[in-house]
Length: 156
Image 1: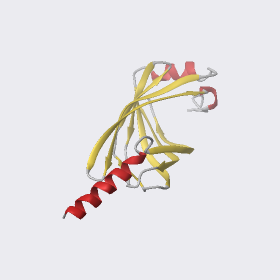
Image 2 (image 1 turned 60 degrees about the horizontal axis):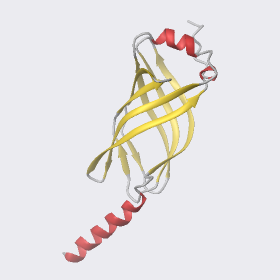
Image 3 (image 1 turned 45 degrees about the vertical axis):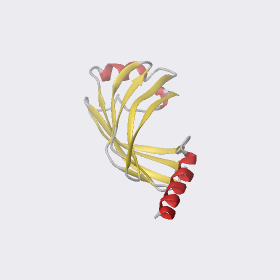
Image 4 (image 1 turned 180 degrees about the vertical axis):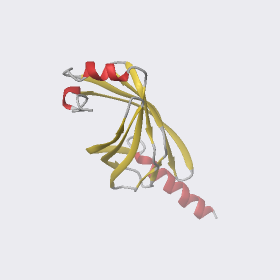
């Protein structure tokens, strides 16, 4: 029994060695807009993520707040549970939807001609490692070019 406890503790300590950066974003491989209306947008995102830990990680359905230039635009919902295999690049194809704040169409019309805007995602992502639930705080900021998004707002 002592040996089994020692082996479990050793496994736990060695697997926690890579908890500094457990998940690494490798690439964004595109997205497909499946639904767009005045209240929400539903889309499927393709990306590649590397799991640096020795254990598989589950990312559970979560919610993040979306800000553009410091103003809240809505909430981003991850609709599906994701399982990241250990020590591998994982190609993901996940469904998400974004619920908009009031007045989104006027904001989109103004931002479509801007050269750059600062996109920020804030919130906590629910994950699980073995049987331990973990909430990881996210505060991701990126400068994007709204001019290149091609939302086709002119066409009905």
